[in-house]
Length: 160
Image 1 (cartoon, rainbow, N blue to C red):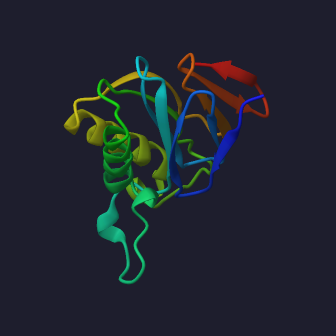
Image 2 (cartoon, rainbow, N blue to C red):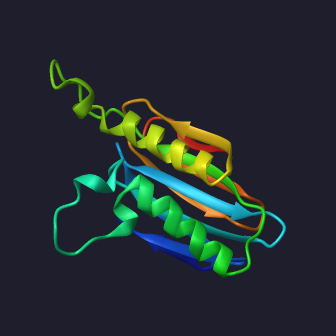
């Protein structure tokens, strides 16, 4: 039985075979997995918000934001020997319906857009995704086979 490393909200971490990595509570948050299939290494960041420019002064958690979290995970994996990275995404749901608020209230979709923009900047292709909708997700990644298990209350487990 392999060890499963748990990543909390705004958390970040990396694993090698035989470890797996998991995060729960992805509503409007986005779980970003970067991995190197050849070297059997992967990592995950649990993104809460699209842009670190809204961060208040004081303690700054890079894993909380799409622009800083994706870049930090990329640097961590490269420093551990990853070379050819691919991405998988899950989450980014629109958990509540609002009659006003405009774009500001679209946190889930904005998170997905911000993550994809950062991945494009880093020249990392999104291999697969399970994003959008109006439901929460729990995800678990296995660097052995590159599978991302996406679990929802209504649909069971989807492997991407």
